[in-house]
Amino acid sequence: MSQVIEASSFPVIDMKAVSLMSSLCHDSVDMIESAILKSDINCVDSMNEKFLNDHSCNGLYARALMIKKGTFLTGRVHKNDYIDICVYGDITVKSFLFDGTIEDSERITSFKFLNGKKGRKRVGFAHEDTLWLTVDHLSCSDCSPEDDISVPNLKDYNRMIEGIE
Image 1 (tube, rainbow, N blue to C red):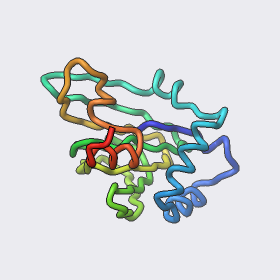
Image 2 (cartoon, helix red, strand yellow):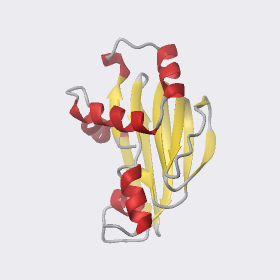
Image 3 (tube, rainbow, N blue to C red):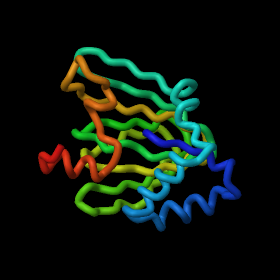
């Protein structure tokens, strides 16, 4: 996931976060991500340093992220299907697909495998500390795994599938 902000920095409680998640639309995802990037409470760099572990082997790339309780975050858009695993925790996730489809919010409260869909942007809110694992196939051994497997947003994904640079 690419952008992170701790909800404890806002006057928001758990139920308000769930309500917000259910009302999100494609445009609001871009606005949330923009606000996170501009905020001085954006904690993505410190989160990546402290809570992100990754490993690649034989063309596979696995990334584990410890998401602290009270954290809002957004993810990058994967270029191909992949596997997500909620190892433990409590998190609400809402997905937005490149074709305009919006999936219902899903609250995940225990160990669960999920089919990751290409062309999907997600927003999450961690109700409790959550350990999230993503497994992807790498197609390039000489480039950054993040750029090989994903693009930052749905606009970039649509440009990619249309062949526009």
